[in-house]
View: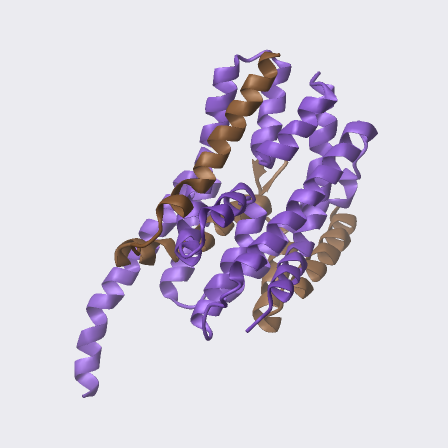
Length: 243
Length: 105
């Protein structure tokens, strides 16, 4: 059995490639939010307790233009709606846990954490079996991201405008996602999901509040499920032929 | 002062969305057709982030061979296919991007 400690550090290590994208993002967030006229305590508080990068960015912009609070909260809701899909996707792997575990893990559920955690759990499930201490992997990955986000926010607040944009470090995010997606391409339905979700995301790129992502994800899942359903109908016939 | 109420509201909606299904799913398992659909969530989400990051540069759709991010992304995908590793394609992709940006500019 893999120890809690090893699981925790495996989660930490799995998160490292993504930090190259998270650090500049946090720096820019801190700088942009300060320049939008927010007080440093509010800028940091959003990182500490909201902990949702793109929602924080949008909120900082809205605060700066004097948007009513209720609109900012509703916008946050729409922007973060995709996290409900992550919650549903990870729930079967965490359902044995008590609430004192579920609540903090849910708090740490960001895009970057979800990406590494679900690819680990799905690989375990297809390979041999799920490890009993797998929630420690989640905690290790999530906390690594949370701590990094706080540090880069603080540096961004103080450093103001500085961020080495010409290094294109934001590109490490899609690169890491590519490295995670490729091993998941196990059959034709999964390839179709990638194609449909990707193309629909391109078509919907202009939609506000990350809504394009929700449309693309729904389309991709629908396409994959349909193809899988047809394959399941075809398979029994093929089995009969070989007998 | 109202800014703190707003931030508290943001905390609440963000947490409740993330907690929703994780909190509700306890003894019962999800229906098998829902589980089958959920298997595709990571693929769909990651692809929906990857494609615009590769094909859209400066707000415009650019599928040409002068798009450094697209070429570097394809290179990283090929390395991921061949090596089945996580870190190597990221490193190769970043180096490719820097070389291509220098070459294409």
